[in-house]
Image (cartoon, rainbow, N blue to C red; front, side, top):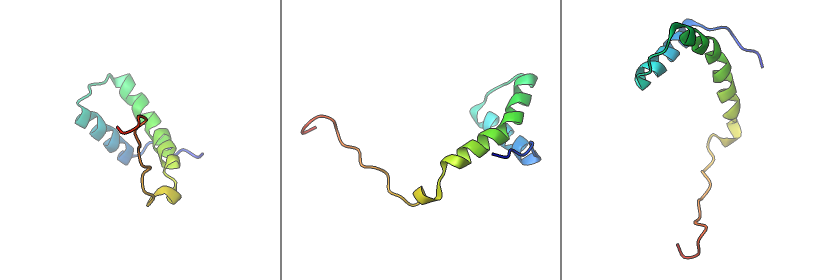
Length: 67
């Protein structure tokens, strides 16, 4: 997996996430989040396989009979 360094778009994404969640963070924690954001983004992208894009979710059945 090749991870690109942080970009201005990454900074905007981190700022947006923190702002929406109303999470105050220390400067060192913010730098760590900004540094790790490209890694997390690529890991999440790897979970989204194209074959599952249009698949229907699995049906959920109760474990109890007649429930």
